[in-house]
Length: 431
Image 1 (tube, rainbow, N blue to C red):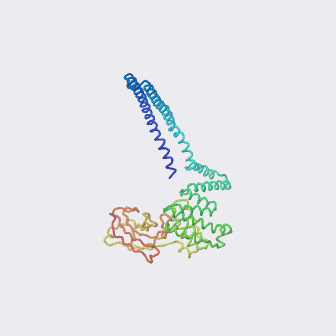
Image 2 (tube, rainbow, N blue to C red):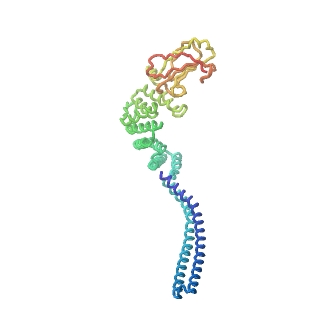
Image 3 (cartoon, helix red, strand yellow):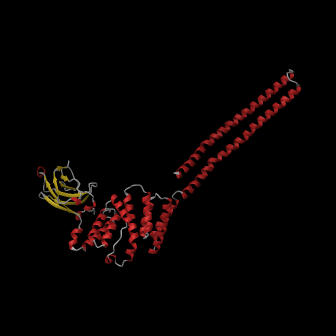
C-alpha cells in the first residue's frame, strides 16, 4: 500500500503549499503593518516620557543629574525596541520569500518523483513485453524464434518476481515453459500461481496445467527417446504429486482439459483406445464448439474410431440412455400430425442440451435411445454429473418451448445408476 500512500502524501503537501503560502504572505503583511504601528507607538511613548522628565526637572521633582540618567536609560530602551522591530521586519520578508519557492520546487520535483516511482515500482518495464512478443512473431526461423521465446521467458520470470500476484503473467510464463519443454520451471511457475491465487474457478485450469507439467517432467525423456511410443507399448507414470493435482482439479471441473488429456494419452499408449476415446470426448465437451482445438480433437477421435475393431466400436461410442415416452390420455387428443417431437438430455445446471433428437410425431408409447452421436455441442452424456431428460411436442416446430406446447421433464438422474429405460410421460402444457 505504500506505493499509493507516498504519492498521495506528496500531492497533499503540494496542494497545501498552494494554500498555506498565500496565507503566510498575508500574515507577514499584517505582521509588518503591526510592527509599523508599534514603531509609531514607541516613538509617541518615548516623546511623552521625555516631556514628562523635562517637566519634572523644571518643577524640581528630580535633580538635573537624575534627569540626564533617566533620559539616557529611556533612549537606550527606545533604541533597543526599535532595533528588535527592525530585525523582525528584515527576517519576515526573507522567510516569506523562501516559502514562495516551496510550491514551485515541489511542482518541479513531482514529475521526477513520479518518473522514478513508475520506473522502479510501476509498469515501465512492461513496455518491453510488446517488443519481445513482436520479436517472437517476426523470427525468420525456428532457431531465432527459440532465442526470442527464451528472452520472453526470462522477462516474464523477472516480472513474476516483481509482481508475484500477477496471475496472468504467471500463467503465460508457465505455458511458455511448457512450450519450450522446460518442464521443471513450468511446475515452479504454476505452483507459484497456486500459492498466491485466491479460490476461483480458474484454479482448476492452473491445477490441470501443473499436473501436465509434472507429467511431462516425469515422462518427457521416455517419450523423447522412444522410436515409436505406441509400438513400444510405453507405460507412462503418474506420480502421487501429479495424481493429487489431477484429483483436486477434477473436483473443481470434472472435465478439466489437461487432466483429460493426461488420462487419454496414458490409455492410448496402453492401447486401451476405448478408454482414450472416452477421455478425449470428455475433453471435447469442455472446448468451445467450432474452435480449432475442438475440430482437431474431433478429427483425432474420428480417425481412431474408424480403425477400431468392430467389437470395440460399440463400447467406444460412449454412454447411451434408453427413454420410453408416452402421453396422458387427457393430452393425447391435442396432438396433431404437424407437431414435432423434441427429446433431449441436458445438465440441470445448463440450459443447452447435451444431446437432442427432432422427430415426427410417433405412435405412443415410443422408445428412443439417446447417445453421443446426437451431441449438440460436442459434449458427451457422461461428461455431466447429473442429467435431466425432457420431451416436448412443439406446435411451431421450434426447439424453443412456446405457449401451448406439450411437454414433460424428468427429475435429475445419474447416468451410471440408470439400469433400465427411463420412462417419461408428457403431462403438461406450456403456459
